[in-house]
Image 1 (tube, rainbow, N blue to C red):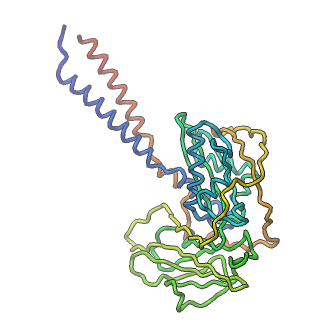
Image 2: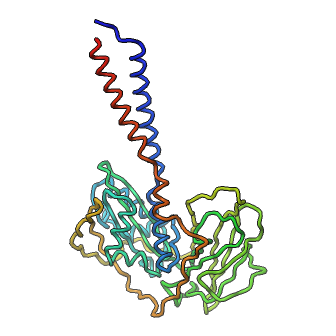
Length: 375
């Protein structure tokens, strides 16, 4: 029997080691993708295109949505009723999200399939009852849960809601950084309960903007959807903008937003991270399951452009009606564009590690055959 040259044995070992290293690298890169964040950016851009402010990304709603996404992925089902019998109203209450209408002005939509968040958003557009949640002016906050099961099926859960006194603001439409101290502050307003309730404010008619929380030098001005603002300095760093909202009854609410001013030479991150508004103190809400069931609807056919599993997620529409006269909307400012779908795609890991792995695996097989034939 002829002995295998040492060079061939070392080459085979090196090829296998490199293949395993690249495989681990590609798996690690795949874990860096945050589909919920990508979905949030798509929704924000869609809302702006529709003449609406973006949603604020609520950590409490996200907690409720993630709970249900994990439940569906772990137990292999698709629907609004959890494996523990909970409905979305109960899950949102248990996350301590105190919404209007005694916690009932919330909603949920679900998508599951083999596609991406772009496929999910496209599918929602084709379902009028579900798309209504995305463009409903009453909702100001969203939570997005994401999970993936062992079969590769993606589960997205979106929870929508509005809390009393929580009016998010968006500096440069949610951008994280700016290279100019001249910014634009986009305001939201109370569209869920325009008349307010007790000491909780209704629709704002005036606002005050300030660099400090005491508003000592701020003057009142009429509420507008977009308000130009100059940061307190032109030195690179983080800057906070405070906004005090006032309604016709003199009730107020305060929101804040942060943006980082960079020098011209600094690179700007492409991921906007809006600051979540803080809810004022509220009385504890009952934790019992809301009364009223949801009637199941027939399954929708799967899209021909993506491998989507149709789901049974009927819309539970709150009885509160939006105001008769809707707000006038200002077109999306050209100085603060959000990342487009095409730009987001470039942030995903490339497929070259997989191709290299396949080539190296082929080389390893060929080397194994050579070693076998030379025995």
